[in-house]
Amino acid sequence: MAAESLSGFLDIRAAAPFLVAAVAFYFLVEQLSYHRKKGPLPGPPLVVPFLGSVAPMIRDPTGYWDAQAARAKKSGAGLAADFLVGRFIVFIRDSELSQRVFANVRPDAFHLIGHPFGKKLFGEHNLIYMFGEEHKDLRRRIAPNFTPRALSTYAALQQRVILAHLRRWLDRSAAEGGRAFPIRVPCRDMNLETSQTVFAGPYLTGEARRRFERDYNLFNVGLMALPVDLPGFAFRRARQGVARLVRTLGACARESKARMRAGGEPECLVDYWMQDTLREMEEAAAAGRPPPAHTDDEEIGGFMFDFLFAAQDASTSSLCWAVSALDAHPEVLARVRAEVSAVWSPESGEPITAEEIQAMRYTQAVAREVVRHRPPATLVPHIAGEAFELTEWYTVPKGAIVFPSVYESSFQGFPEAEAFDPERFFSESRREDVAFKRNFLAFGAGPHQCLGQRYALNHLVLFLALFVSVVDFRRERTPGCDDPVYMPTIVPKDGCAVHLAQRCAKFPTF
Image (cartoon, rainbow, N blue to C red; front, side, top):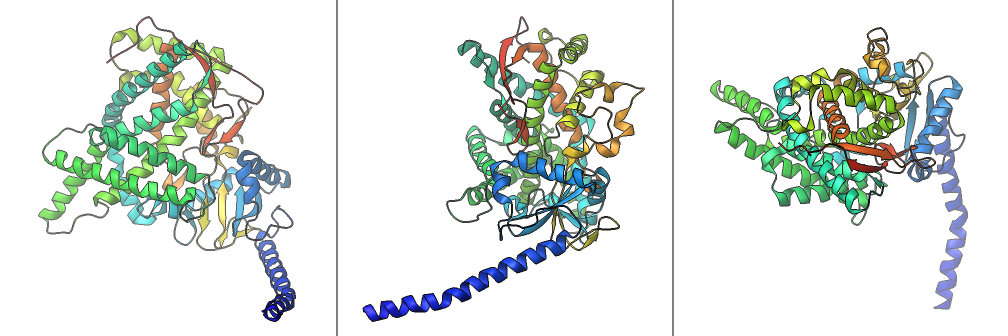
């Protein structure tokens, strides 16, 4: 027995040099591969085998991406290279190069992925991964969800949910003696209920909404976790949560089809969608053709999840930054309050109409400046399906993940870009929204530009109008409180802690 143990130990010792040599060879090959792909780009001289820079990215995402931006800026190239979990990456700071990526989303160039491991996380039925005519056809079908009539329907729903949550915030403040509390999570909860109500309307029961919230929270955690798709890991729980969410939304689509087929009036986004979908299905049936593509209930549920993801965390980010910006700029707050009070009063007993929203031109400029100054989704990852000549001197290798930074673009071109200045979008003489349109990339560009940007801006305008009308607030400012942190979109470091008190004599109800 002892002889066998000694023999085994000697075998291990004999194999050790070969193991060390194999590890050293793997390390050398990985370094050579990284440097070949990096070419003239700035980047770390050596990378940790397989993991690369994933540890600093997870530990401090803000610091990591700031370092990439600084490296790209210092080099003058507008680009920087690194290595993450077995993937070569290219960070893009330059706006024109980001535009070039957005304009070339196609099978033989760049594929939008939304997240470095998004296909596993979001599922297959996803707008993000579509190209060409199929993608154009689906966007055409989705467009009626964002007509002026549809947006007007949503505005009434949005205001009821916003006011209900503002009432809860004020009650909490009163119960806690006016103590400041962070509004990030309350904003997230408000936005989730808004999205559920606007997108799925009457088709989600109370219990379904509670399950929905639990699964969406699992998804949020998974977005920021290591991509370990094994039982017990956050990434696996997130993937399972997304599958349940898609099934739930698919059931909503099925119920909406039945109600629209019976002649019901649209009450939410899925109703507007299914109304047009049923018309196309009936036309196809009458002509003896098969049903149009992308009309299956669960497939539609997957597309609805795309809307939910786009609306939820990005909007939470913008609402927090809007409150912080108004507190930091009392002159802007005073102008917003004056403009809103000129067209709407909390005592009116009526919601803000679509015409009144259009009349709030300065408040709309504030909303656009919030999104420019602090774009919620700072990076829009794409993968190179084939090698792509991004500049005359650099070709992105096939399989590389590129990260166009819409955050960095927001601070290029615009005069005094670091300043929060709504006048840039309000002043007829400045018209920076036109002059620097190619630097305003918060809603993307090219074939995958955000379909719901009008809805997103309306939501921010409505929140601003209601918030400043019914709430007196004061930001609790502490050192570094407005430093951006990833959650997963960027939010103030302290969660935007504010003191709240009721401003209006009578809280609005309608």
